[in-house]
Length: 239
Image 1: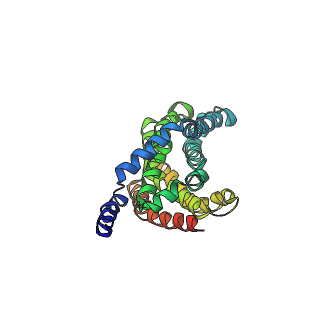
Image 2: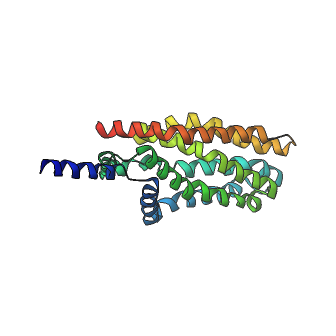
Image 3: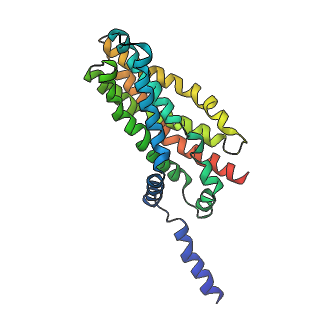
């Protein structure tokens, strides 16, 4: 009987390791679709900021065109970090994080799946909505296309920095206040370079080196930071 029980246990053990990235992705996709209002709020905020900027500064064409790219990027950053403090907190409170750890699931893959879906429903849609800068700010379609490309390339790095700050403050009481203080100093250089790309294009200069630098930074963040966040989440659960 003992041999049979041990053999059953050994057969069950691989199941604990069999939580694939596809299963984690499907779980997060269903959870995101059920909470429609949570991901609609950042998009509404983006549209409100994009609409209020031209109304606030007037209709002078040259000034609107100079203000267009920074305004879109500021709206994008605010919509991206909105609610980022609740990215992992509900899973810690309702026991989902504990279940993943006990089941020996890969926390880094879960973080990657969760952040990728969050990016699709936030920055992915915002990148498309950024084309509204053409009628709102008078940008050319080529400038708007480069702006959309800069958002697609740079936003993964911005999201990873914000999520990293959220995971670091997860076990701290009222840690949501600290998330912008940790994330913004890391995000501001990215924002400056991304806005500078469009300014370089308007001046007739080559923007490829900056785009390559932003893309390399996003790739490094996507590869490295999910593993770091997985460790911090496990430490938050143990504490």
